Amino acid sequence: MQILTASGKGGFVLDSKNLKSILLADDIIDKPAVVISVAGAFRKGKSFLLDMMLRYLTASDKSNWIHEQSQRGFPWRSGFRRHTTGILMWSKPIPVTLSNGTGANILLMDTQGTFDNKSTVHESSTVFALSTLLSSLQIYNITGNLQNDDLEHLQLFTEYGRLALDDTSSKPFQKLLILVRDWQYAHELPLGAGGGSELIKEWLDTPTGKKELEKVRTHIRGCFGQIEGFLLPHPGQNVASSPNFTGSSAEMDTVFVEKLNELMPQILAPEKMTVKSIAGNSVTAGQLFTFFETYANLFQSDKLPKPKNIMQATAEANNMAAAQDAKTQYIKEMEFLHSDDHPSLEQTELLGKHQEASEKAMKAFTDRKKMGDWKLSENYRLRLMKDIEEWYKFAERANNTKRQKERLNAENHNLGLIGT
Ligand code: GDP
Ligand code: MG
Image (tube, rainbow, N blue to C red):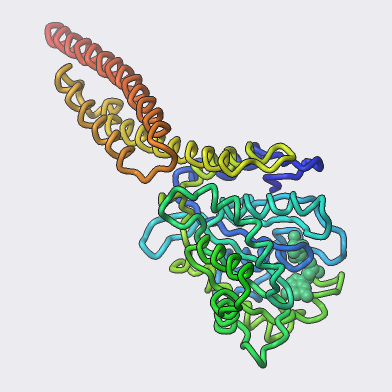
């Protein structure tokens, strides 16, 4: 599903309806989200890779996944024309049990962009910035070799995110995987994760003596919690240029198949999955929707938003999520009032329960790592307090109704007794 589209005038439009149908579904909304995005220049096999990930994730036998025929997912195709610039999300979140036993959902994101001319660089940077802000694993897909250009692009894209999240102690982004396609120098650096990690070390850690380059590298290191690399070989002529390529593994080079087999568990095994987190708090699909809306609003116009505005918006969305969670916690604690098995309470007893639940909720809000200044957080705290008081009025009414019903039942019961 298309969830974000370039308007063609430099701005972006969020497809809220599509995004809602994915993230706000009953069985998805409250579960943590693992968000995997693939970004980079167009016609470099990004959508093809996502299709392979989908095949792996939905395979009944993981050891034989590549031979299972699956439905085509993300649109990949040969040719030079590109699709519209934007972000796509696979419409069916894939449930996963993480290694700590929690249930989460994997959301796969495909980005479309190009860096071939000036007018599209702005759009593509936005797509990259947004997908990096919103994912827990960003796969930066490049072809041939890692170039200084690629690093400079990466710096440009991540600049926004870094500023957006500057005032938190945690690194702004989670995981980055630099995935090199069509690697031709296997005699120098071996294919797979080993060669990939050597390449990353060489590129990010070996001193060059060039000041500008060092700055770019320090910036990239500082942005991501974890950076990994992986080298994939050329997939063979059928995959690379045949218009009749169907996606079947028989048409791919054997070494390519072998390396894809190594890559998939490296990113998609449950113990490798990282739940999306913002400012150190894990994010549910419902909260992710709020963040999408917040950021998309900022990038709506053709002017790039000021980093300060991104920071402010992130802080607001972050405070909003914290307040929402605290309120949900209060409502849950008071839920017993709506159960038929639970008798009504005396007024003082009810007040006691409310005070207890309300203190707990307010503490949950204060204890949570939040962004932005004290004043912003204080505003949200006051609003939360007011919301809880409103809810308490509901609770009081529910309790009174219950008490009246109980009284009526008792009277009926007594009448019944008199009648017999
Ligand atoms: P995207 O624009 O980056 O999403 O690229 P696509 O996934 O649509 O793929 C564009 C073309 O490249 C298709 O014909 C694919 O079959 C082909 N392709 C897929 N993976 C690779 C690869 O690793 N190397 C090469 N050379 N071509 C690939
Ligand atoms: Mg594509």
